[in-house]
Image 1: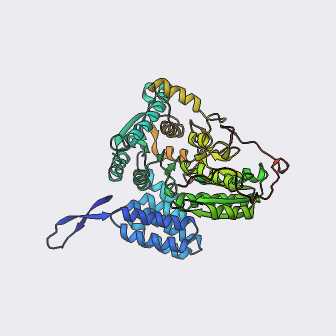
Image 2 (image 1 turned 90 degrees about the vertical axis):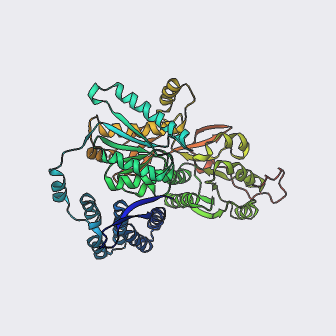
Image 3 (image 1 turned 30 degrees about the vertical axis):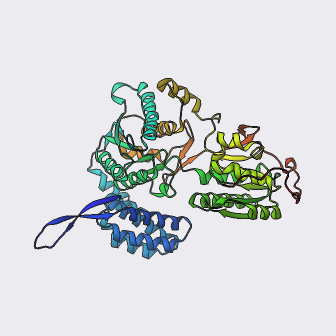
Amino acid sequence: MFVIFAQASCSAASKRTKTRMVPVESAILNLQAGLKSYQIGDFEAAGQVFDSLIQRAAPHDSQLVFLALYYGIRSRLETGRISSADSLYEASSHLVPARQRLDLEATLGRDVSAGKEQLFSNKPRLIAFKLGVVLPLSGKFAEFGKAILEGIQLAVQEYNQGQPGRNKVLLETLDDESNPVLAATRGRILAADSLVAAIIGSYENETSLALSLVAASTGIPLICPTADAPGLDNLGPLVHVLNRTESEMAAKLAEFSVNELGLQTFSVFAPDDERGNLLAGSFVSGVRAAGGAMVFDQRYTSQTSTFENQMNLLRRYLPDALYLPAESNEITQLASQVFYFGLGPLRLLGTEQWNSERVIRLGGKYVDRAVFASPFYENGEGLRWNEFKDLYERTYRKPVNHYSALGYDALGLFVRAAGQFPADRRLLAENLNLTDTYQGAVGIYTIEADGKVKRKAFILELSEGNVVPARAEGPEMNQEKTAPDSSSPTIAPPGSR
């Protein structure tokens, strides 16, 4: 179990201490629950979760206390309870370091310029020439950790070749063995080393969350190259998540479908899980913002084996398009059932999961003309994919992969923000959140002031077995809709899951 060890006092007479185990798995689940309530606008419920978390985490884990305080204050401010936000700060701010108190005061709208000047005026600037890396280099995910490291090393090699001797950047690489406790420990080691400017890591969601909490509490910038857990990119301006883009892609696809494809009425059929609901919500919001209309919005569970009821409802509403944010192993079955129930004229819309050889090969005519949004298109203008692919395959003598490319992009973002090494950690963090249009191997990135990473959306289409840029169409170019034939289908029904 993921735990933090903390010392707790026993009786005053004995003055002995014993090790107390504070369960952090449940605390992190509480944090995620609070963030989920906050994201959907239930600020009352979010505030209650964060208040409880402050009591549970204090005084043993200042990083969790800071995050709970920050979002507890924000939850109150969102509902206009300014005095309550001030009271929460006054009651609990002593539980976090002075630098983080300034961040909380700034959130409350207070002038903290004098405090920042006093806090940093007598401290030497942290001039660093190393970048820290925490990845699973042994254990069950070692293959993926080593792939990410290969991309990072390529970017270091590329950067150092253009630098004089003293300006080269070094890597400090530590193995988290796919263990969140070790990831947090390794992250604290790197954060405590003044020669380390920033951290890249880890591979999976749990270890990346552990590193994110370390970054938020210690003031060291972090890039998570592959993790995609919901809420991970809400942990503060020092945490940057490269692979968390699907919500914005869904909104971009909705906008394109209305404004460029000329579609007007839409339906959604999504998995009833966290990812499916998040994508469906983003797509629906995007459709309405663009002036389109939603006529059908339903979910299915992992136990669903036939979709007859849902398809019959679709036949009744006859929308222009159907958004299917399914996993790649579900897409072919769903698309074939659309045809089986006589809904062939529907324009199918999807996510980057549709950019799959499995979908293209098995989907055939069922997925032809489907349109989807993706942050990556190998021939996309501005991407350095082909350049990276050539460098990777020449160096390692094996086929390229996206894990290495994300590691390559993470390192590239850091060295661009630093300008040159040695680098000031605090200045690097500030510059990183001003990143505008960084052209990487698998994404074109911007980073906003709150640390959230945005990637350019490529709107793509499946056309006769190929992935091509989607073509804009006016309403007059769309196929005229007719009521589906109510007679028996002429093709065989698709198999159930």
